[in-house]
Amino acid sequence: MVTLTVNGRQIKAPRGSTILEACRLNGIEIPTLCYDPDLRLAGSCRMCLVEAKGRPLFLASCVAPAEDGMVIETESQDIVEARRVVLELLAARHEFNCQTCEKNGDCKFQDYCYQYGVKETRFTDGGRYVYPINDPNPFIERDYNKCIMCTRCVRACEEITVARAINVKDRGHNAKIATAFDGHLADSPCVFCGQCIMVCPVGALTSKVSAGKGRAYEVDRVLTTCTYCGTGCTLELNVKDNQVVGVTSNRSEEYSPVNKGALCVKGRFGWDFIHSPDRLTTPLIKENGEFREASWDEALDLVAARLQAIKDSSGPDSMAVFTSARITNEENYLAQKFTRAVLGTNNVDHCARL
Figure 1 (cartoon, helix red, strand yellow):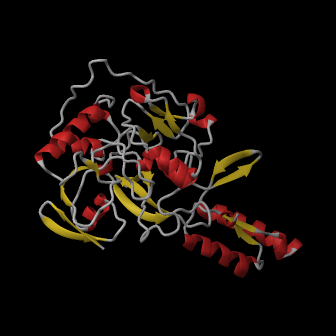
Figure 2: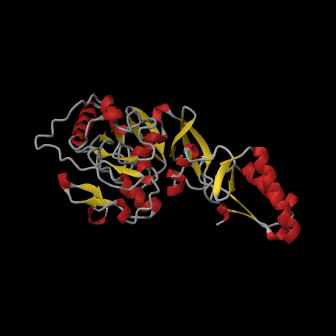
């Protein structure tokens, strides 16, 4: 263990901890934008600057190791002013349209600008380059006019998804996140897992499927298990007015031990069928090549008669039942029970096994 003094308070932390980890372990909050506990350290945003006695320069607490005997100030007047400057520098490339941004109310950059009283920036004399928003993929909106170059998306793509679809292109004021040759996501190794959306602290990366359907503070998050395959990934259904409007990740190992927040394209974006106007609301019977609406009694009587006829003529093993991941576990249990007990066959399978 190491012992250090932070804001006049003596704290202890495991040897090898960073200053940020030591502080958070002891309930002392330091603002961060580029830091993510599940990703390699970057130290690029500089929001986590702290003042260390005897050191000539401020330290980025997310990468600076906590050393025995350190005396740290996290909210001195100089540090607060430095963070204001950092926010202004980041704002020089960040478009302020919070009213219409999908991340409004769930944006760390917005929160810090409010906390530190930053309403505008002094660093736009050369003008702000306007990036076109033009990526025809159906899932992820990329608006680099809001990007603060924290590189969390790059690191998540490389370390969690292992797709390496994006990286930093160019340097200095011209730097931006891009695919190889600055092409579309669909032409890159991107698998549209949406992990980049989950780690983005601003509105540079958002879900096209959820756009305009509800802000983070308007939805209830319902923890559940994805039904698309047999992995059993945990996800959060975002529900507004009794309608599913999006899916987010729960990255806690306690609630998400299988996938730790990572999802595939189906789990992240394949929920729109729930409220699709194309879903059947009544049984249909096909006669003379055309479907007509029928009552449940008529449809069930027809199915029962046909199944009984097949069983009598060809035996129970001539039939099979294939169930869906889009129904509940209880409904799947009933389906296999019906197959074995009523039809008399073990020919039952489920798409999640594949």
